Image (cartoon, rainbow, N blue to C red):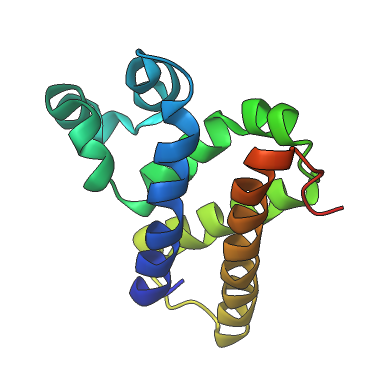
Length: 137
C-alpha cells in the first residue's frame, strides 16, 4: 500500500469514525477509541484526548474500526465481507510499514481494489444512518 493510498484511506476513515463513535456518548473517546490505539501511541493519545483523532495514522484508524466493528455491524446490518476489506487494508498497511522488501506489484492492485471498496462502504453506512438499510445488500 503506497503512502498516497494510506492518506486517501485516512481521509475517508477519520470523519466517518468521528461521526460514528461520537454517537457512543460522552465517554466515546475512552470507551470506543483509546482501547484500540497502539501501545506505541497510547501516551500521546491519552494526553491529547480526542484531538489525537486528527493526528492518528492509518494503523490506529483501522484498529479502531476493527475494534468497533461489531457495534457498527449490528447497528447497520453490514455485510460481513466488508470486514475482510478492512482486514486487507490493515495487512497492506502493516506490510508497507514493516516489510524489508518491496511489495509485489500485483498486490498493489488488490490494495487499490480494497481502497476503492472503502469509500462506497463508508458512504453506504453513513447514508443508512437515516434509514438503517442493510449495507452491501
